[in-house]
Image (cartoon, rainbow over all chains, first blue to last red; front, side):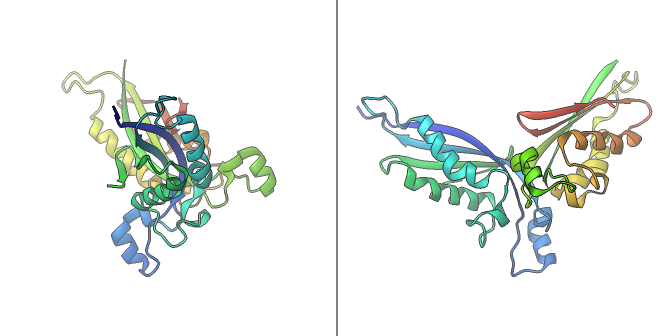
Length: 137
Length: 135
């Protein structure tokens, strides 16, 4: 009997960002991104939910040890993004707009090599309580 | 006496750094919050007024009108802004949650209708960190 189970770990980080396209004028950026284009940045409390799907190990009963998962998420994500300016302080968003969509993809790509390849990985990222994204969709 | 609360929210960048201190001293006192390039939060704001309900409307005060006042004088000034750089009423102040809640009270109090009293302002910086101010 091989029953797949989804395991979730919640973490959070607080960061500044702005949304803009460098090839556009200030007016074009404001038209598309509104106040999110503020050149002086704004910020969010990001809530991250990392989902790992797999069959529980017959010996441990675990899909993944959640303590290990927490450590991986802190090492790869929280230490990289918490109390940072996503546009200025991170390599990932030097040339990539730090939208919730792109942040979720970046997080997936950072975590994927650290999780057993037999386990499925999904990312849910809340930018605000009412705006959140899932990757992969 | 009835207490009526309106919840609003805004998203902003800030940093905690005393301009009279060295970078090292700021990092020692404020840790990651001193990041020169800012960080940010989803702030949750709770404004509580108190008074006696109007016998004809049953309202302490029309909460939609209270929301309009809060948005005009507070949210429009703070939402999607850099608190240290973009907000006139935080100029020259440390942008801690404590100082921000006091400044919000000072901005809002003159615009509260005379038939009610401003009772408190509660401000969440994160779901687990909040401050309250009673004037």
